[in-house]
Structures are given as structure tokens and as C-alpha cells.
Image (cartoon, rainbow, N blue to C red):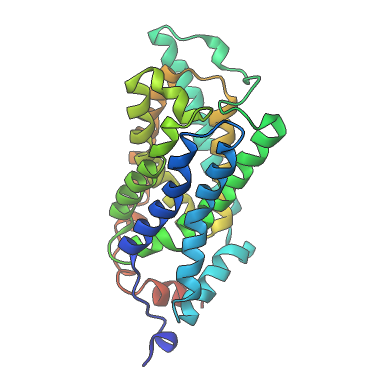
Length: 283
């Protein structure tokens, strides 16, 4: 039985990440040394890289099952469990509220319960900032959910996949801390803020995997949640200190999500046969 007929496919996560990092960083590293008028173009090119690599991997795979799976994840609007997405949005909004309230205990201000006037990154204007957030949410999820997460998850349970993906996804942003005008560069005033940014990516990896799996591996569900997270992180007037508190809160919430969804995160029925397993679930 050939690969196309059986639905089997040999994922290549190491090669994917090597190429995704390479084709992102070859644009982002030069952006460190360019002006704020040029760097947004280079950052956009780098942002597109994982989605481009993901799409190429699928298109040249020779697997009809893999191609159909990507199509289902992108245009399968029927797959989205809208109540689950709504719950994820509510949970993240609650994380922000609790984080701000806890931060009051360490001297932070109630003024954090407000919207910022500007975005943390500069050089693109307000309309450009909204566009950047939306495009980032869409393009990133095509790359990470189109091939990346499945390439890791095919070899292990979703708990360890979330841990590995969260760390790799977080570190993927590394060059941005040196590019003037980015949110990450603004954290360089304190090494703790930088460390917190990278650490926070790990529990967020679990949350986004939860959103992904709860909607039958829908990319659209992840795009919507990612857009909400990006907007809230940019527009709610949380201080960097409060965002450190937020990492602790989101970690606690992640533990609750994992414990409440043990079968989702720890089942191994899909291991080695993800495409076949998910195709069987759709029938």
C-alpha cells in the first residue's frame, strides 16, 4: 500500500524548523542594521517564511492525504468549535484581569485597566499596526499549524509537543529584540522582561494547542485566538512587571487546562499515524 492510499507520511520536523529559522532570520538579522522605514519590509518577509516553508513541504510531499489535510484545516470552517474558541478568548481575558489585580499587590497601577494610545512597535502607523497584527496572526498560524505542530505531534503525545513547540516558537522571535521599533526591542531595558517574554511562549504553546485540537485541528480557530491575544497584549496598558505576573497566571491556567483535558494531551493513539487517525475521526 503506498503512502497516498494509506494516508501515512513521514514528517520532517527538524528540517522544517531548520528552514523556517533560516528563511526568517536571513531577513530579520539584516533588519537589525537598517532604518525603521526599511526594517518592517524585512520583518514581514521573515514573518512569511514559516508559512511558505510549510506550504512547500505539503505541496512537494507527494501525499494526497497531507494536501487534503491542509485544505481541511484552512477552509474547513465547519470544523471550528465556536464555543471552545469563545471559552479560550474568555480565559485569556480573565488571565489579563487577574494579572492586573495581582500586580496591584506589588505597586502597579489600576490605570492598566485601559487601552494604550499607541502600539508598542513603531514606524508603520496605527492602520499599519492593526494590519501587522492581523497579518501576523494569519500568516503565523498557517506556518505553525499547517505543518509544524503536526510534524512534532506525529511522534509524541500533545503534552510534549506543546512543550517543544512553545520553546521553539518562542526562540524563533529572538532577532526581534535587536530590531529597533519592535515590541521585543522595548523589553531590552530590563533583562527580566526579555527572559519573561521567551518563557511565556511555553505555556502559550499549550493554550494554542488546546484551541487547535479542540476545534479538530482548525487553523481558523487558532487565527482568531491568536489575533485576540496579539491585540490584547498590545492595547491593554499592562506594565512589563505585570506581564511577568501574567506569565505565572497563564502557567497556572495551563496546568488547569492540561489536567481538565488529560486524554487530549496524553493520548498516543495518533502517534505515527496522525493523518490516518484524523481522517478516520472525520468519517
